[in-house]
Length: 197
Length: 197
DNA sequence: CACTGTAACGGCAGTCATTGCAGATTTGCA
DNA sequence: TGCAAATCTGCAATGACTGCCGTTACAGTG
Image 1 (cartoon, chains in turn brown, yellow, red, blue):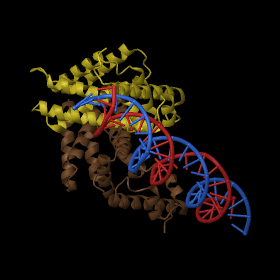
Image 2 (cartoon, chains in turn orange, cyan, yellow, red):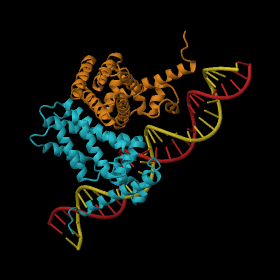
Image 3 (spheres, protein in one colour):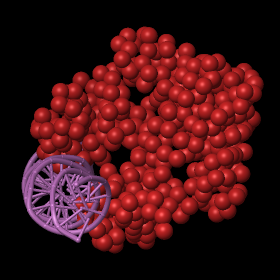
Image 4 (cartoon, helix red, strand yellow):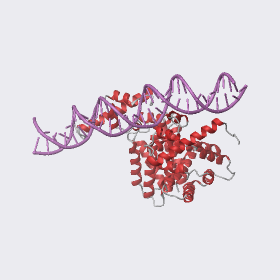
Protein backbone atom coordinates (compact mmCIF):
# COMPACT_ATOMS: atom_id res chain seq x y z
CA UNK A 1 0.00 0.00 0.00
CA UNK A 2 1.20 3.45 -0.84
CA UNK A 3 0.71 5.89 1.98
CA UNK A 4 0.84 8.83 -0.37
CA UNK A 5 -0.83 10.58 2.50
CA UNK A 6 -0.21 10.10 6.17
CA UNK A 7 -2.80 8.27 8.19
CA UNK A 8 -3.88 11.56 9.59
CA UNK A 9 -4.53 13.01 6.17
CA UNK A 10 -6.35 9.97 4.92
CA UNK A 11 -8.57 9.97 7.94
CA UNK A 12 -9.27 13.61 7.50
CA UNK A 13 -10.14 13.17 3.85
CA UNK A 14 -12.47 10.32 4.74
CA UNK A 15 -14.29 12.36 7.34
CA UNK A 16 -14.59 15.27 4.94
CA UNK A 17 -16.12 13.03 2.32
CA UNK A 18 -18.45 11.52 4.89
CA UNK A 19 -19.71 14.99 5.73
CA UNK A 20 -20.27 15.87 2.10
CA UNK A 21 -22.07 12.60 1.45
CA UNK A 22 -24.25 12.87 4.51
CA UNK A 23 -25.14 16.45 3.71
CA UNK A 24 -25.85 15.70 0.07
CA UNK A 25 -28.26 12.97 0.93
CA UNK A 26 -30.02 14.95 3.61
CA UNK A 27 -30.29 18.03 1.41
CA UNK A 28 -31.82 15.89 -1.31
CA UNK A 29 -34.26 14.25 1.01
CA UNK A 30 -35.41 17.02 3.32
CA UNK A 31 -34.16 20.21 1.72
CA UNK A 32 -31.38 22.59 2.61
CA UNK A 33 -32.99 24.75 5.25
CA UNK A 34 -34.62 21.77 6.88
CA UNK A 35 -31.28 20.06 7.40
CA UNK A 36 -29.32 21.23 10.42
CA UNK A 37 -25.61 20.94 11.01
CA UNK A 38 -26.51 18.59 13.82
CA UNK A 39 -28.35 16.31 11.39
CA UNK A 40 -25.33 16.20 9.12
CA UNK A 41 -22.77 15.51 11.80
CA UNK A 42 -24.98 12.87 13.38
CA UNK A 43 -25.24 11.03 10.09
CA UNK A 44 -21.52 11.36 9.48
CA UNK A 45 -20.85 10.20 13.03
CA UNK A 46 -18.75 13.09 14.21
CA UNK A 47 -19.27 15.71 16.84
CA UNK A 48 -21.23 18.76 15.81
CA UNK A 49 -18.35 21.05 16.60
CA UNK A 50 -16.14 19.17 14.17
CA UNK A 51 -18.13 20.33 11.18
CA UNK A 52 -16.57 23.75 11.44
CA UNK A 53 -13.05 22.41 11.35
CA UNK A 54 -13.80 21.19 7.84
CA UNK A 55 -16.06 23.89 6.46
CA UNK A 56 -16.37 27.47 7.53
CA UNK A 57 -20.10 27.45 6.96
CA UNK A 58 -22.98 25.30 5.89
CA UNK A 59 -22.91 26.69 2.35
CA UNK A 60 -19.24 26.02 1.87
CA UNK A 61 -19.84 22.32 1.91
CA UNK A 62 -21.54 22.66 -1.45
CA UNK A 63 -18.52 24.20 -3.15
CA UNK A 64 -15.58 21.89 -2.56
CA UNK A 65 -13.23 21.96 -5.57
CA UNK A 66 -14.43 25.33 -6.81
CA UNK A 67 -10.87 26.37 -7.39
CA UNK A 68 -10.03 23.78 -10.00
CA UNK A 69 -11.89 25.29 -12.89
CA UNK A 70 -10.31 28.64 -12.24
CA UNK A 71 -6.86 27.10 -12.17
CA UNK A 72 -7.57 25.29 -15.41
CA UNK A 73 -8.63 28.54 -17.02
CA UNK A 74 -5.56 30.35 -15.81
CA UNK A 75 -3.45 27.52 -17.18
CA UNK A 76 -5.19 27.88 -20.52
CA UNK A 77 -4.29 31.55 -20.54
CA UNK A 78 -0.68 30.79 -19.75
CA UNK A 79 -0.49 28.16 -22.50
CA UNK A 80 -1.93 30.38 -25.19
CA UNK A 81 -0.74 29.95 -28.74
CA UNK A 82 0.90 32.85 -30.51
CA UNK A 83 -2.07 33.29 -32.80
CA UNK A 84 -4.81 33.05 -30.18
CA UNK A 85 -6.78 36.04 -29.08
CA UNK A 86 -8.31 36.30 -25.59
CA UNK A 87 -11.72 35.10 -26.72
CA UNK A 88 -10.21 32.00 -28.31
CA UNK A 89 -8.31 31.22 -25.14
CA UNK A 90 -11.44 31.34 -23.04
CA UNK A 91 -13.31 29.11 -25.45
CA UNK A 92 -10.49 26.62 -25.50
CA UNK A 93 -10.41 26.59 -21.70
CA UNK A 94 -14.12 25.92 -21.63
CA UNK A 95 -14.05 23.03 -24.07
CA UNK A 96 -11.08 21.54 -22.26
CA UNK A 97 -12.79 21.80 -18.91
CA UNK A 98 -15.99 20.15 -20.01
CA UNK A 99 -14.05 17.24 -21.47
CA UNK A 100 -11.83 16.71 -18.50
CA UNK A 101 -14.25 16.90 -15.63
CA UNK A 102 -17.78 15.88 -14.90
CA UNK A 103 -18.08 18.80 -12.63
CA UNK A 104 -21.04 20.25 -14.41
CA UNK A 105 -22.95 17.01 -14.24
CA UNK A 106 -21.87 15.32 -11.01
CA UNK A 107 -24.65 14.64 -8.51
CA UNK A 108 -23.24 17.27 -6.20
CA UNK A 109 -23.16 19.75 -9.05
CA UNK A 110 -26.76 19.06 -9.93
CA UNK A 111 -27.85 19.52 -6.35
CA UNK A 112 -25.80 22.66 -6.12
CA UNK A 113 -27.35 24.11 -9.23
CA UNK A 114 -30.78 23.49 -7.84
CA UNK A 115 -29.96 24.99 -4.46
CA UNK A 116 -28.33 28.03 -6.01
CA UNK A 117 -31.68 28.68 -7.65
CA UNK A 118 -33.74 28.30 -4.54
CA UNK A 119 -31.75 29.05 -1.40
CA UNK A 120 -30.61 32.66 -1.04
CA UNK A 121 -27.67 31.87 1.19
CA UNK A 122 -26.34 29.33 -1.27
CA UNK A 123 -26.84 31.65 -4.17
CA UNK A 124 -24.93 34.35 -2.36
CA UNK A 125 -22.01 32.06 -1.71
CA UNK A 126 -21.99 30.82 -5.28
CA UNK A 127 -22.02 34.28 -6.74
CA UNK A 128 -19.27 35.31 -4.44
CA UNK A 129 -17.03 32.53 -5.67
CA UNK A 130 -18.02 33.31 -9.23
CA UNK A 131 -17.10 36.94 -8.93
CA UNK A 132 -13.76 36.11 -7.37
CA UNK A 133 -13.06 33.74 -10.22
CA UNK A 134 -14.16 36.33 -12.74
CA UNK A 135 -11.83 38.92 -11.32
CA UNK A 136 -8.87 36.62 -11.22
CA UNK A 137 -9.40 35.53 -14.79
CA UNK A 138 -9.78 39.12 -15.92
CA UNK A 139 -6.57 40.09 -14.19
CA UNK A 140 -4.63 37.30 -15.86
CA UNK A 141 -6.14 38.06 -19.24
CA UNK A 142 -5.13 41.68 -18.95
CA UNK A 143 -1.61 40.63 -18.03
CA UNK A 144 -1.34 38.14 -20.87
CA UNK A 145 -2.69 40.35 -23.64
CA UNK A 146 -1.09 43.78 -23.90
CA UNK A 147 -3.86 45.06 -26.12
CA UNK A 148 -6.43 44.30 -23.41
CA UNK A 149 -6.71 46.67 -20.47
CA UNK A 150 -8.32 45.59 -17.22
CA UNK A 151 -11.70 47.10 -18.04
CA UNK A 152 -11.89 45.38 -21.40
CA UNK A 153 -10.72 42.14 -19.84
CA UNK A 154 -13.45 42.43 -17.21
CA UNK A 155 -16.06 43.04 -19.84
CA UNK A 156 -14.93 40.07 -21.86
CA UNK A 157 -14.90 37.82 -18.84
CA UNK A 158 -18.28 39.12 -17.78
CA UNK A 159 -19.72 38.32 -21.16
CA UNK A 160 -18.20 34.86 -21.10
CA UNK A 161 -19.43 33.92 -17.66
CA UNK A 162 -22.71 35.74 -18.12
CA UNK A 163 -23.51 33.73 -21.20
CA UNK A 164 -22.56 30.41 -19.63
CA UNK A 165 -24.59 31.15 -16.55
CA UNK A 166 -27.60 32.13 -18.61
CA UNK A 167 -27.59 28.84 -20.47
CA UNK A 168 -26.97 26.79 -17.37
CA UNK A 169 -29.95 28.38 -15.69
CA UNK A 170 -32.13 28.14 -18.75
CA UNK A 171 -31.39 24.45 -19.24
CA UNK A 172 -31.70 23.49 -15.60
CA UNK A 173 -34.10 20.72 -16.52
CA UNK A 174 -31.90 19.20 -19.19
CA UNK A 175 -30.99 15.68 -18.18
CA UNK A 176 -28.49 14.74 -20.84
CA UNK A 177 -24.95 15.91 -19.96
CA UNK A 178 -23.85 15.84 -23.59
CA UNK A 179 -26.64 18.14 -24.67
CA UNK A 180 -25.85 20.52 -21.85
CA UNK A 181 -22.15 20.62 -22.65
CA UNK A 182 -22.81 21.32 -26.28
CA UNK A 183 -25.29 24.04 -25.48
CA UNK A 184 -22.88 25.76 -23.13
CA UNK A 185 -20.03 25.63 -25.60
CA UNK A 186 -22.16 26.96 -28.42
CA UNK A 187 -23.55 29.71 -26.25
CA UNK A 188 -20.10 30.88 -25.24
CA UNK A 189 -18.99 30.92 -28.86
CA UNK A 190 -21.99 32.93 -29.92
CA UNK A 191 -21.59 35.33 -27.04
CA UNK A 192 -17.93 36.02 -27.67
CA UNK A 193 -18.35 36.37 -31.40
CA UNK A 194 -18.27 40.19 -31.26
CA UNK A 195 -14.88 39.98 -29.57
CA UNK A 196 -13.16 37.97 -32.20
CA UNK A 197 -11.19 40.36 -34.28
CA UNK B 1 -49.87 70.63 3.99
CA UNK B 2 -50.58 67.87 1.53
CA UNK B 3 -51.14 64.55 3.13
CA UNK B 4 -50.20 62.70 -0.03
CA UNK B 5 -49.68 59.82 2.33
CA UNK B 6 -51.82 58.90 5.26
CA UNK B 7 -50.47 59.51 8.73
CA UNK B 8 -49.81 55.84 9.00
CA UNK B 9 -47.68 55.80 5.88
CA UNK B 10 -45.74 58.88 6.86
CA UNK B 11 -45.04 57.43 10.24
CA UNK B 12 -43.89 54.22 8.69
CA UNK B 13 -41.60 56.01 6.29
CA UNK B 14 -40.14 57.98 9.16
CA UNK B 15 -39.44 54.87 11.19
CA UNK B 16 -37.88 53.19 8.20
CA UNK B 17 -35.59 56.13 7.64
CA UNK B 18 -34.73 56.21 11.32
CA UNK B 19 -33.64 52.59 11.11
CA UNK B 20 -31.52 53.24 8.05
CA UNK B 21 -29.93 56.29 9.63
CA UNK B 22 -29.23 54.55 12.90
CA UNK B 23 -27.75 51.55 11.16
CA UNK B 24 -25.65 53.67 8.83
CA UNK B 25 -24.11 55.56 11.68
CA UNK B 26 -23.47 52.47 13.76
CA UNK B 27 -22.00 50.57 10.86
CA UNK B 28 -19.67 53.48 10.18
CA UNK B 29 -18.60 53.76 13.75
CA UNK B 30 -18.31 50.19 14.97
CA UNK B 31 -18.43 48.10 11.84
CA UNK B 32 -21.09 45.86 10.39
CA UNK B 33 -20.56 42.65 12.31
CA UNK B 34 -20.06 44.51 15.54
CA UNK B 35 -23.46 46.17 15.25
CA UNK B 36 -26.39 44.07 16.36
CA UNK B 37 -30.01 44.46 15.40
CA UNK B 38 -30.63 45.32 19.01
CA UNK B 39 -28.14 48.20 18.77
CA UNK B 40 -29.90 49.54 15.72
CA UNK B 41 -33.41 49.32 17.07
CA UNK B 42 -32.33 50.84 20.36
CA UNK B 43 -30.86 53.85 18.59
CA UNK B 44 -33.93 54.17 16.38
CA UNK B 45 -36.15 53.82 19.43
CA UNK B 46 -38.27 50.92 18.29
CA UNK B 47 -38.68 47.40 19.54
CA UNK B 48 -36.23 44.85 18.27
CA UNK B 49 -38.97 42.74 16.75
CA UNK B 50 -40.08 45.69 14.65
CA UNK B 51 -36.90 45.67 12.61
CA UNK B 52 -38.07 42.63 10.74
CA UNK B 53 -41.33 44.20 9.73
CA UNK B 54 -39.26 46.70 7.73
CA UNK B 55 -36.38 44.59 6.45
CA UNK B 56 -36.23 40.88 6.00
CA UNK B 57 -32.63 40.76 7.09
CA UNK B 58 -29.77 42.85 8.35
CA UNK B 59 -28.23 43.07 4.89
CA UNK B 60 -31.39 44.23 3.24
CA UNK B 61 -31.21 47.51 5.06
CA UNK B 62 -28.23 48.42 2.92
CA UNK B 63 -30.10 48.03 -0.35
CA UNK B 64 -33.24 50.16 -0.13
CA UNK B 65 -34.05 51.57 -3.57
CA UNK B 66 -32.17 48.89 -5.45
CA UNK B 67 -35.04 48.56 -7.84
CA UNK B 68 -34.95 52.06 -9.23
CA UNK B 69 -31.91 51.72 -11.42
CA UNK B 70 -33.31 48.56 -12.93
CA UNK B 71 -36.60 50.25 -13.66
CA UNK B 72 -34.81 53.17 -15.25
CA UNK B 73 -32.86 50.81 -17.45
CA UNK B 74 -35.98 48.95 -18.48
CA UNK B 75 -37.59 52.28 -19.31
CA UNK B 76 -34.60 53.18 -21.44
CA UNK B 77 -35.06 49.96 -23.34
CA UNK B 78 -38.72 50.66 -23.89
CA UNK B 79 -38.01 54.18 -25.09
CA UNK B 80 -35.39 53.16 -27.58
CA UNK B 81 -35.04 55.14 -30.78
CA UNK B 82 -35.53 53.41 -34.11
CA UNK B 83 -31.85 53.67 -34.91
CA UNK B 84 -30.47 52.54 -31.56
CA UNK B 85 -28.84 49.16 -31.10
CA UNK B 86 -28.88 47.35 -27.75
CA UNK B 87 -25.44 48.59 -26.75
CA UNK B 88 -26.45 52.19 -27.39
CA UNK B 89 -29.56 51.77 -25.27
CA UNK B 90 -27.57 50.50 -22.31
CA UNK B 91 -25.09 53.33 -22.57
CA UNK B 92 -27.86 55.88 -22.75
CA UNK B 93 -29.49 54.35 -19.70
CA UNK B 94 -26.23 54.56 -17.82
CA UNK B 95 -25.56 58.19 -18.63
CA UNK B 96 -29.13 59.07 -17.78
CA UNK B 97 -28.94 57.30 -14.47
CA UNK B 98 -25.74 58.93 -13.34
CA UNK B 99 -27.15 62.37 -14.14
CA UNK B 100 -30.43 61.86 -12.44
CA UNK B 101 -29.42 60.27 -9.17
CA UNK B 102 -26.61 60.53 -6.71
CA UNK B 103 -27.03 56.93 -5.93
CA UNK B 104 -23.49 56.08 -6.73
CA UNK B 105 -22.14 58.74 -4.44
CA UNK B 106 -24.64 59.03 -1.60
CA UNK B 107 -23.25 58.31 1.87
CA UNK B 108 -25.24 55.10 2.05
CA UNK B 109 -23.88 54.04 -1.33
CA UNK B 110 -20.33 54.70 -0.23
CA UNK B 111 -20.80 52.69 2.93
CA UNK B 112 -22.44 49.94 0.94
CA UNK B 113 -19.60 49.78 -1.52
CA UNK B 114 -17.15 49.42 1.32
CA UNK B 115 -19.16 46.74 3.08
CA UNK B 116 -19.69 44.80 -0.12
CA UNK B 117 -15.92 44.58 -0.32
CA UNK B 118 -15.39 43.43 3.21
CA UNK B 119 -18.42 41.64 4.61
CA UNK B 120 -19.25 38.34 2.92
CA UNK B 121 -22.92 38.42 3.82
CA UNK B 122 -23.34 41.87 2.32
CA UNK B 123 -21.46 40.92 -0.77
CA UNK B 124 -23.65 37.92 -1.24
CA UNK B 125 -26.78 39.98 -0.99
CA UNK B 126 -25.44 42.59 -3.35
CA UNK B 127 -24.46 40.07 -5.96
CA UNK B 128 -27.82 38.44 -5.67
CA UNK B 129 -29.58 41.67 -6.46
CA UNK B 130 -27.14 42.38 -9.23
CA UNK B 131 -27.73 39.03 -10.87
CA UNK B 132 -31.48 39.45 -10.67
CA UNK B 133 -31.17 42.84 -12.28
CA UNK B 134 -28.88 41.46 -14.93
CA UNK B 135 -31.33 38.74 -15.82
CA UNK B 136 -34.27 41.06 -16.02
CA UNK B 137 -32.42 43.48 -18.24
CA UNK B 138 -31.26 40.66 -20.48
CA UNK B 139 -34.79 39.36 -20.81
CA UNK B 140 -36.13 42.76 -21.80
CA UNK B 141 -33.30 43.34 -24.24
CA UNK B 142 -33.98 40.04 -25.92
CA UNK B 143 -37.65 40.95 -26.18
CA UNK B 144 -36.97 44.39 -27.58
CA UNK B 145 -34.38 43.41 -30.17
CA UNK B 146 -35.41 40.56 -32.46
CA UNK B 147 -31.85 40.06 -33.65
CA UNK B 148 -30.74 39.39 -30.08
CA UNK B 149 -31.47 35.99 -28.58
CA UNK B 150 -31.45 35.46 -24.82
CA UNK B 151 -27.91 34.13 -24.72
CA UNK B 152 -26.50 37.08 -26.64
CA UNK B 153 -28.52 39.46 -24.52
CA UNK B 154 -27.11 37.84 -21.38
CA UNK B 155 -23.60 38.14 -22.69
CA UNK B 156 -24.07 41.78 -23.57
CA UNK B 157 -25.56 42.56 -20.19
CA UNK B 158 -22.82 40.61 -18.48
CA UNK B 159 -20.19 42.61 -20.30
CA UNK B 160 -21.92 45.86 -19.43
CA UNK B 161 -22.31 45.17 -15.75
CA UNK B 162 -18.98 43.40 -15.52
CA UNK B 163 -17.18 46.43 -16.84
CA UNK B 164 -19.00 48.86 -14.58
CA UNK B 165 -18.37 46.70 -11.56
CA UNK B 166 -14.69 46.40 -12.40
CA UNK B 167 -14.26 50.14 -12.54
CA UNK B 168 -16.27 50.77 -9.43
CA UNK B 169 -14.13 48.34 -7.50
CA UNK B 170 -10.91 49.62 -8.98
CA UNK B 171 -11.72 53.24 -8.15
CA UNK B 172 -13.04 52.59 -4.68
CA UNK B 173 -10.74 55.22 -3.28
CA UNK B 174 -11.77 57.94 -5.72
CA UNK B 175 -13.33 60.77 -3.81
CA UNK B 176 -14.56 62.98 -6.61
CA UNK B 177 -18.03 61.92 -7.86
CA UNK B 178 -17.53 63.57 -11.21
CA UNK B 179 -14.34 61.66 -11.89
CA UNK B 180 -16.01 58.41 -10.92
CA UNK B 181 -19.01 59.02 -13.14
CA UNK B 182 -16.85 59.82 -16.11
CA UNK B 183 -14.69 56.79 -15.56
CA UNK B 184 -17.70 54.50 -15.36
CA UNK B 185 -19.26 55.91 -18.48
CA UNK B 186 -16.04 55.67 -20.44
CA UNK B 187 -15.42 52.14 -19.25
CA UNK B 188 -18.86 51.01 -20.35
CA UNK B 189 -18.38 52.58 -23.75
CA UNK B 190 -15.04 50.91 -24.21
CA UNK B 191 -16.37 47.59 -23.02
CA UNK B 192 -19.35 47.57 -25.35
CA UNK B 193 -17.38 48.76 -28.33
CA UNK B 194 -17.17 45.27 -29.86
CA UNK B 195 -20.97 45.14 -29.85
CA UNK B 196 -21.57 48.26 -31.85
CA UNK B 197 -21.96 47.52 -35.47
C1' DC C 1 -68.01 62.10 17.30
C1' DA C 2 -68.43 57.17 18.36
C1' DC C 3 -67.38 52.51 16.42
C1' DT C 4 -64.98 48.72 14.39
C1' DG C 5 -61.75 46.25 11.57
C1' DT C 6 -57.04 46.17 10.49
C1' DA C 7 -52.23 47.40 10.41
C1' DA C 8 -48.35 48.11 13.31
C1' DC C 9 -45.85 47.46 17.68
C1' DG C 10 -43.13 45.05 20.70
C1' DG C 11 -42.35 41.37 24.24
C1' DC C 12 -41.32 36.31 24.81
C1' DA C 13 -39.65 32.00 23.82
C1' DG C 14 -37.50 28.97 20.68
C1' DT C 15 -34.43 27.33 16.67
C1' DC C 16 -30.20 27.28 14.59
C1' DA C 17 -25.60 28.77 12.75
C1' DT C 18 -21.31 29.97 14.39
C1' DT C 19 -17.53 30.73 17.76
C1' DG C 20 -14.26 30.59 21.88
C1' DC C 21 -12.64 27.67 25.37
C1' DA C 22 -10.64 23.76 27.47
C1' DG C 23 -10.08 19.08 28.28
C1' DA C 24 -9.54 14.54 26.03
C1' DT C 25 -7.57 11.60 22.11
C1' DT C 26 -4.81 10.43 18.39
C1' DT C 27 -0.94 10.60 15.35
C1' DG C 28 3.81 11.86 13.78
C1' DC C 29 8.31 11.43 14.84
C1' DA C 30 12.54 11.14 17.46
C1' DT D 1 8.52 4.48 24.29
C1' DG D 2 7.39 9.34 25.07
C1' DC D 3 6.41 14.04 23.94
C1' DA D 4 4.48 17.83 21.00
C1' DA D 5 1.29 18.93 17.61
C1' DA D 6 -2.99 18.14 15.48
C1' DT D 7 -7.80 16.70 16.12
C1' DC D 8 -12.05 15.90 18.17
C1' DT D 9 -15.76 17.29 21.08
C1' DG D 10 -18.75 18.92 24.65
C1' DC D 11 -20.27 23.25 26.81
C1' DA D 12 -21.70 27.77 26.94
C1' DA D 13 -22.63 32.05 24.71
C1' DT D 14 -23.92 35.29 21.03
C1' DG D 15 -26.83 36.94 17.67
C1' DA D 16 -29.98 36.55 13.56
C1' DC D 17 -34.50 35.34 12.65
C1' DT D 18 -39.41 33.38 13.44
C1' DG D 19 -44.00 32.28 15.32
C1' DC D 20 -47.29 33.63 18.59
C1' DC D 21 -50.22 36.97 20.62
C1' DG D 22 -51.98 40.60 23.43
C1' DT D 23 -52.05 45.85 23.02
C1' DT D 24 -52.29 50.17 20.72
C1' DA D 25 -53.03 53.44 17.00
C1' DC D 26 -55.21 54.75 12.74
C1' DA D 27 -58.56 54.68 8.83
C1' DG D 28 -63.05 54.68 7.07
C1' DT D 29 -67.99 54.65 8.12
C1' DG D 30 -72.42 56.20 9.82
